[in-house]
Amino acid sequence: MAVDRSIMQMPVGGNRQIKDLFLEKPVERITTSMDLDCALAQYKEHKQIIEEYTQQRDERIAQINMWLASVTKEHLQEMERIEGLLREHHERWLQENPKAKTIKRPFGQLKARKSPDKWNYREDDLLRWAKENRPDLVRVKEEPNKQQLKQKTQVKDGWVYTEDGERVEGVMVTPGEIQYKVEVE
Image 1: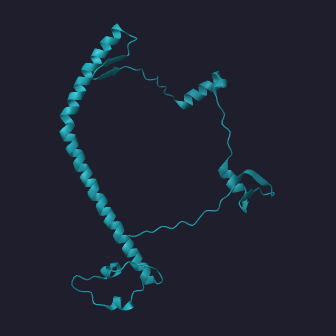
Image 2 (image 1 turned 90 degrees about the vertical axis):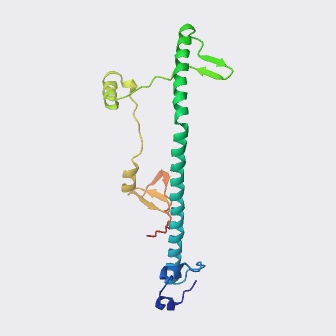
């Protein structure tokens, strides 16, 4: 969209502002710096509209969440109270029948399952102890130093070579691509 330079000399009055002139017609092709400015202004305008809708959505979600919390509060409290009663009953049941971990009834079930033990480690202390007392419990991890590899080699046609010209096996380099990004303030 080629914009006539006389636009910049037009008097801006009343409801008409220069910004509006950039937003009047959709940009179809960018061939001049004026086209570029129009495209960026239109991009910015659309971005701001999306941000406004997103903000409205977030406010409505917050309102709905507050409403939901208020109407379900007493129900959740009552469920917690009943859950406590059910747990007490189930604990008594398990004391009498240790193998009966599930109680099936027409309106639901009570299940008791033991979660696995949780092991908490202090890595430094454990490693020190294992090295001194049980080396068979120590695992040594080998891996190439990729950072040093990049510093000490050269890339040619996607292959990696040492200073001596020897090709490094197991690595290829794909050239980075130009990435485009639009930023508006």
